[in-house]
Image (cartoon, rainbow, N blue to C red; front, side):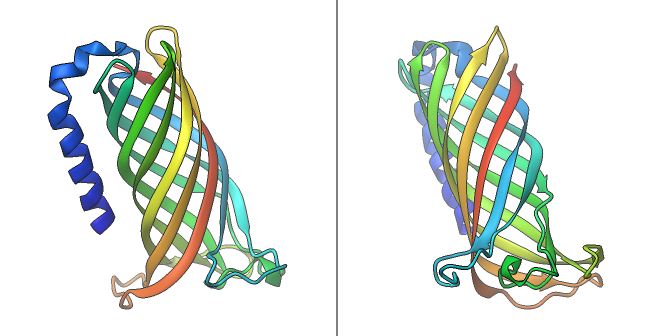
Length: 217
């Protein structure tokens, strides 16, 4: 949870400084927004667990919903808070040992993200931005036939950083594309009776390239 606390502190500082200058930037990229995202998702061992020359990537299609609130902090600068709930089709292949990455047979489950982003307007309708925050993901245990096992799963905690480009469409709509890197350093195995193991250290990387569309209000 330390990542969530850091994100909240950064966001609070940004909002505190924003009112005096909020009207100096284009309103196109300010205010609340909601949207959907979809793209490529790949999980693999981090550098401490990697096996050079072996493809250990478990990849698939990611999809989800996002929302946030942005404010202007200068003629071209934007900061905001954002959150996302997503899922993925990424899973290990029980018949391909190279696809294993340390958890046995699993399928990617829901992924939660909360963080901040900072943007810069390169034109009145186009913004580049960087982002960072806390992510919590699940890896659902599966059988050899890729069927989930009675809601038993690994629960992973980590951080996410990324960068992207957002373009305003018309008055309220927007489209964007972004790359995100996540690293999970803590995990626990949760059973269907509500019990779980203690947290243990892991090193799992996640690379995602997603596109999104949404609306501002």
